[in-house]
Image (tube, rainbow, N blue to C red; front, side, top):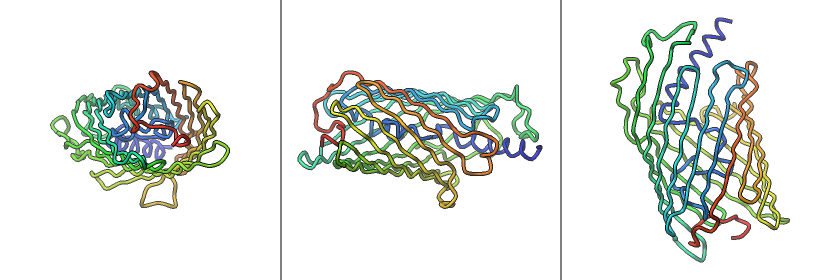
Length: 319
């Protein structure tokens, strides 16, 4: 039993260091909210989009990671957009909260072939707190003897290319290195990580659509990287409402044949309302100690057709 406690404590510490200034990405971006991944998506639609996300990781384990987040983005003028994201992340005795303010600009590369290019930049504020009052690990870190609190300011930048149903985005998060004044224990100074997201929505008969996609994330500090292989299916009706189902396969890139998680998901859009649920099943040794990760996303859409610029996002079935 002591070995199990030690394993969870060490894993918790590693996640605490890796999560700083970088809220872990589950599969929320597949719930009709790619703004989670790249600032280039801010204002990509022709409405005000609001999304509320919540997920709880490793259900069944005491003090397991959990996250609540708010995302909103809006088209301003014809070819620019702004976005705001707020989040609260708890992982045992480690608490992180903060937000991003984003500006994006959208260009029309070719009107007739529907090619568009978007650039985005975000200012990031993050607060990071370690509260050890209730901490009773089997082998505590000797360098952490009291509560710690710090805050950081940083930036991210990215771009998005679209061509009909194809899309590709790349962005760099936490461009500035971290100041190490507040801690004495060894920590990574380089917090920069890179995300790449690409996919293609394929139109089929009977108002249906298949969308395979890939998400790749690489951490500069230690060279770790992770990949998601995703597949979504949508079924539309004549009012442009739809329901969808999908699955995500996540793995470390040095262990392609050993998935970290497999995540089925479902959702629907009805008028101005969207709802989705995803469940990630752990595929490693920790699976016997928890029942997986649950995530829910609720979305609202207001001010339809706020911009008539052709570079706003439309459903692929209408392209």
